[in-house]
Structure formats: C-alpha cells, structure tokens
Image 1 (spheres, rainbow, N blue to C red):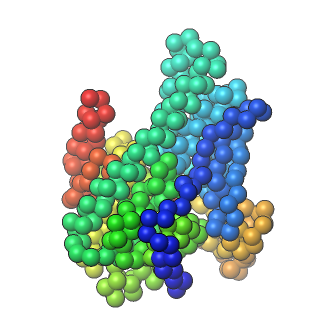
Image 2: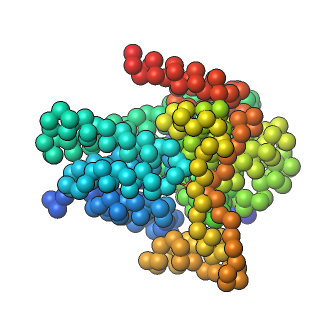
Image 3: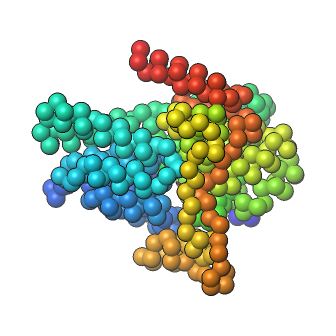
Length: 384
Ligand SMILES: CSC[C@@H](O)[C@@H](O)C(=O)COP(=O)(O)O
C-alpha cells in the first residue's frame, strides 16, 4: 500500500486547480482544460478550439466527472456559437459524447436554450453566442456554490452518523476540484473534514481500469496535505473487515427518480460491503445530477468502454511521462484476443444508500418520495 501522511501545516492551502476555463485570445475563443489523462505525471493544458476536439477530450476522459462534464458541455455550445460553427450540430455531438452522466446533456441543453432564446428574440450571432456563454458561466458559478454547500451539509451529516473523533473515509473514483467548478462533491466533504481536523484517514480506491483514484484523488489529497492511503479496489473488503472504515463517501453520475445511484464501476460492491459491515454509505451530488425523468436504476444507460482499457494498462502518462500516446495505447497484460467486460459505471439501489447529500441538504432514508420532495423544495428556493 502506498501511504502518504499529512505533510503540510494546517491552513496552507494550494492554489485552485485550473480545471477548466474560457479564454479569448486574439485568434478566437478557446476552452482550456487541464488534461486529466496526464495527471499526476504532468500538468498539461489542452486547448480546445472546436467541438470535435472537446468531444474527443470528453471521450478519452481528459475532462471527466459529472459536474465538470456539464460545464464542458455548456462551454462547448458557447464555443461553437462564438466561433460560428453550426450550434445544433455541436449540441448533437456533445450530448452523445458519453451517455451516463446526466449533467453533460443538461449542461449542453442549458446553454443551447439560452442561445436559441436569444436567436428567437432576434439577437445577432455575437449576441446569441454571448447568451450561451453567460449560461455556461452561470452553471459554473452555481456548481462552485453547490460544492461549498454540499461540503457543509456532508460534514454535518458525517458528524451525526459517525460521532466522535477522526473519521476514516473510504472513497472511490475522483470527486474533487478536477470534476467541478468548485472543490467537488464527496471529496469536498472529506476536505472539509480535513480542514476542521476531523479526517483521520482518506482511503482511496485505485479505481480500475483508468485509475481515477490512484492518479487523481491521490493528487488532490496530496496537494491539500490530507492523510491518505491508496488501496487496490479489491482490498476494500479486508479494510471493512478490519474495522478501518467509518463511512464511504462517493459521488454520482446520475441519480434516478427512485434514488438509484449510477457512479463509477466499483461503487455498488462498496455499498454491499458497507451494508454488511454497518458502515454509512453516503452519496454526495448536486441536484443537477438528479434525473427525475429516469424512473429507476434499470433505466440508466451505463457506458460500455473498450475492452482494451482492461486488457492493457492504458494510462501511459503514468507509465511514460512525456508520452503523447493518450489513453488507449498501453501495455498489454492479457493474451491477444482476450475479451473484456468494461462497464464504466454501476448502479447502487436506494436501499443500500444511507443518505444522499445535495446542496439543498440531505435525505435519509433514500426514497423516491424524499428525492422528489427535495427537488420540489429546491425549485421553490430557486424561484423565490
Ligand atoms: C462528482 S464526480 C461523480 C462521478 O462523476 C464520479 O464519481 C465518476 O464516476 C466519474 O467517472 P468518469 O468515468 O471518471 O467520468
């Protein structure tokens, strides 16, 4: 096990990560992304000047995680509009770039609606593009604010469910500033615990096959000087059995109307383990990840990715710093022709979820009615 203890004095905060930003150089507007396929070996920026480049970045996971996909989608529409590309074509390309995270489609539709409304009101192309950009920026701000509120609600819930001293939190995938306009979802709660001296240890699942935990969560945890330990996904069971986990905190890519949670593959087995060991299993996600139009877990489309990600170690930036190969050109670990099962996500049923924490508060137990009620109350807050 790789082990990393807190190295930085409390209160020394690293600069915010340049996860995603809009820039307007003289050659025309661009969307600048921190290329997550190259972390933690290198901090390399990826400059998208058109929508196909952004779609490619989304598909190789250079930009990833549900809230950030929403922002990328919205800025992608703004980019198409500002550069004079066919906006409806851009909308179609972006919406289907990846299927599971509901935020991608809703972010795209949010910016597209602003663009179309401006056009319908007689705006010129420049003005309509400005409307799309304003809508993307609005989502960006809302996501940053949601992060702050989720962290506060999540920390309060953690204190309630796991009273006493330092928490030992197990997390899966990456849910920090790399997936958000702010400090993230589940990771933001762990960070709040760290900042208030309540985090004893962050257990980080490596998250096979693309290693979002091993590469990205450790990177974020190290930047903040958190006490963290990396484990292989299949070591989680023995960690629970040893009584070393106080709570599981994960994010979500889509939460169906019945409270089923789609998240990075490997989340469901953690929920089963947590239930068996009487450990709270807490999902932290903004309301933008709740999809009341999807009735249940079985209706969530789970992205199936190339088997090559399993039959090869496919993160060359970790293996070969400076390589330009990108994800998908790794080192073979199975005989040629081996078939692989590679769903990117799995679905956890609501009865295994102790609580869902959103920016508008938490629900526990998780039921369709409680979720609908939370969404309805949040609409009232937004409207009033
Ligand atoms: C706040 S992030 C929540 C989820 O998007 C995250 O846990 C996750 O599953 C990301 O998957 P990825 O395939 O890396 O985009």
